[in-house]
Image 1 (cartoon, rainbow, N blue to C red):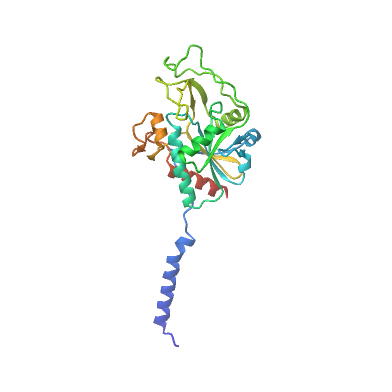
Image 2: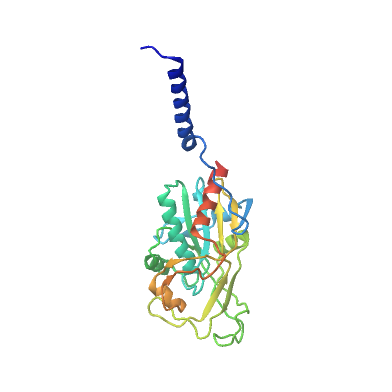
Length: 279
């Protein structure tokens, strides 16, 4: 078969065109972008040996440490099962985030909600909470003894002393994590009227725990690489039990309760950026 100059040129043009079409998917894949400052800030802070070795257990009773997560990108948030304002929205975001991680088939990613109310949050309660929300991520509670919480002298749920800090609810494993991450965890009076426990026997709560919000992303080398201090901007549906516990008439949230907070997609962006920048 003979080729004319014109037919050869046509073949070259066609081949080049085809190669250009094929290149973007294979060669020009966009690298993950660092989340904007409105979400949080980048850092490089190595975890201390005390934090790495702090002892926890997940909702299944399996012993856990942050040190055992080496080689993974770990997404950490504080929570407690009796939080009546922020935590249910945080865990709602985590459910959506885990769905994103699963859909995108991200490997070596662990999502961990770390308890800040170990006196009340027994393993049985955390397990019940995990079942209530349908958790497919890790819910950790501290191992070891916890001191008994005490409100300031004269403080009651009706005293309006919500800015007054009590004592107790201190656990050695939680304490090292609090100090490292810079979390604020405080025993304060309950709101008035006091909330009623969502878990049987549904007793009135006698104190509350104020705590920091946001998320922290740890890289596979066990360095904190991204920090967000904002509340969760959740939209979607929550457990009806928790919505009632928080005082909402509906468990469906079409608009975020905390505007300007972090979203599951922004959290995913942080995870992907940390994982990519650490490889």
